[in-house]
Length: 198
Image 1 (cartoon, rainbow, N blue to C red):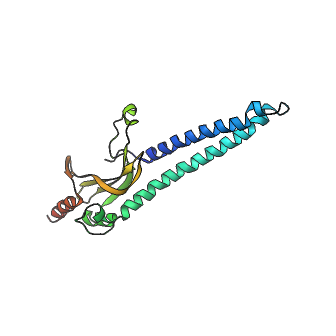
Image 2 (cartoon, rainbow, N blue to C red):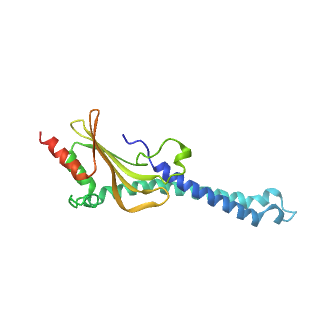
Image 3 (cartoon, rainbow, N blue to C red):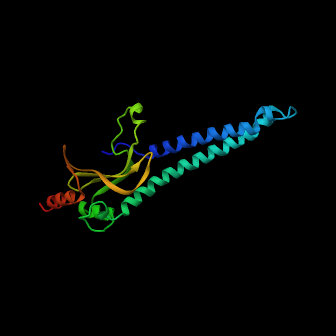
């Protein structure tokens, strides 16, 4: 089961950078429009008004960047759907990954796509904060025979950003309570072809 949406990771990373920018900007504007630089005839309220206005604009900018982070998640998933499956496994054809996946799963299969941390979070913030957490596009498919397939494709890390070469991170086929793991997409295809032939 796909457990974690890395939209939170992407936005959290952006929020940290934005907070640093806000702090630096607020310090700079304090230097430029500080109380000590205001003439005594100008009220304290008038002196702080430019600071408040700039801070509001910076907050609006931070919200815009968070929306962009969410949109980027959709774009990354769409990119993974369209890459040639041969880029993930050289023994497979050049069909788009999502087309190949539908072909081996059956037309009635239903899929859920998301970004996550590749299942690497420990749940301990003190430990996880020190790690450069990987990011994956995960897809989980429910097949007509009630089996479930799960594929995670690593797309980069939180600190390093996107990788130019996405790679398979994890593959499994679930039949009831039994999980069967695979290292390569070709092996999953071979197993599903065998099961569908029965």
